[in-house]
Length: 78
Image (cartoon, rainbow, N blue to C red; front, side, top):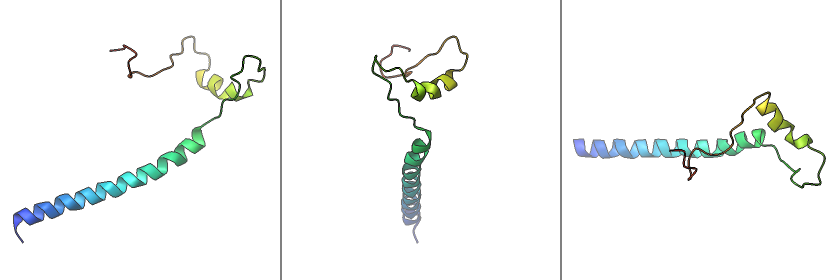
């Protein structure tokens, strides 16, 4: 078999290998998110039940400063 065909076959094999791995990752991500998502329903100013926000309070803890947001997408951080 010519070297050229061996290289092409190897590249094709790597392509299919990584393509199947990408599909595995895409099927795992929704499962991970489902176990870590929490619904926030207390968005109305008249709402007095903040039990759904306990997850955020636990994550913040006793921190004095909390930064929320993205480092990119036009926040002028760079």
